[in-house]
Image: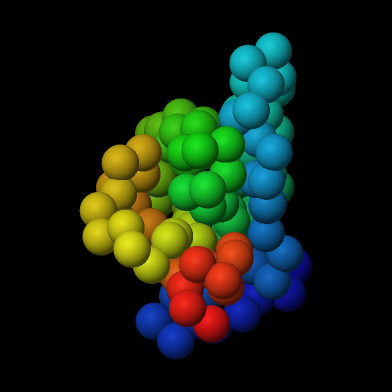
Length: 109
């Protein structure tokens, strides 16, 4: 698998796991956790999520999926600029945080 070196020096796979729409349907929860864990098993350690996905439920699901395997995952999370603290996923768990402006009209742009 092609790897990319981050500015931090971390080496991460160029292909990661996206989590948009995960954590929204309780009936799929176990399957979604299993899929994220299977991805880790296959070396897909970069997991991309966002606090706005499922109003935070996605980050909670990711946290459950990587429980006991945190050192295997490189977490990227998009956050609202006005949120200084993390509820679902503590900042110490996130390797890369990206400020996201889903609607620029609310940012005065």
